[in-house]
Length: 168
Image (cartoon, rainbow, N blue to C red):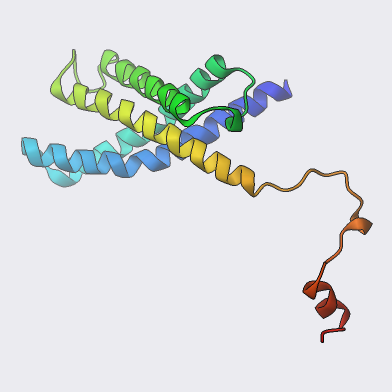
């Protein structure tokens, strides 16, 4: 049971991370769309920011699911960046296809639907790459494994001399 709760928590965390990253891209997409099609700028940009944020959350959870199914028990440090990007793009494409199929932007494949599907695919690939880079960077700074005796911990060199008061 704990394994499933940890996976669900990870998927929600990934979704929230992607939602945060996708919102500004949605606002920019809304601004471009409003400018090209003559829509009210503020309303369209805000709506796109919210929509992309929701899509980012769903995309992050889809990506987590796709990655879990495809890569199984592999750790992030065992996956190549191109492979990770492909899974992210596939998750983004699935998300875009679901959004268009569900009629998020009207019925059928429209120009706006194509923009959303294409953007979600690119955002999925970019978000996956960013996720892997951040995970690897965090892994480099991870805490050492526990189990050592606290008495064995000590300062070395200059730090030990200053602490004891024997600074030269």
